[in-house]
Length: 282
Image (cartoon, rainbow, N blue to C red; front, side):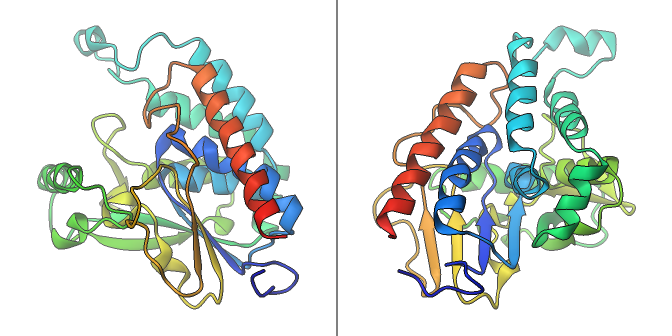
């Protein structure tokens, strides 16, 4: 069994990005955390992993699951091309994503989040002086170059000069501010708008690393929650880190906002894997 820090076997936890696949993380945590007494001092997260880390430590995971399933059940498609002719968004994701955060995080939930572990959210910044359009094209190129191998830790975004900026979610003073931060950390045009934060473009933190272990450097023991399976030998063997991946392919796709059943199956797979992980460490 891992050495315990303040009663917890891990003093840091990292939530990888991955869109709807991150419902697996929520299910995993619901079983593993109480069984193992998980109580990290610091949490690192990006993209949808940041949304689920916030939901967990705000105590609203069940509400997020229910609200999101209700919304996707009423959504027929992941794209509505005809909306472009009407001046409306082609993709429904941003509105549904933001509405779920605002519907589930009230002032009480925000207080619980602020009183919890330090939650560091990673966003990606383009090189200084690069405008919106060039930054978008650079981000798209980095994303496409990353796809053939899909390493655990991305590298192409950093090669293009993107840098990680860390924002403490605990300092968000309103649900709207938290929603903005989560959407900024998930910024993936054209599915989401291209956001600006303090006057500069901001992108999905996965551009620099969708598994942002670097933002919790200094932790003695880190649990890393991935959001998809990797081939044998691809997961790094690093002292002090425990990587956990789904036991089988995740049922739902990253940006599939149409199937409440696949969302539930993803969450349930996480619960089974969380229970198995807890039992393996007793």
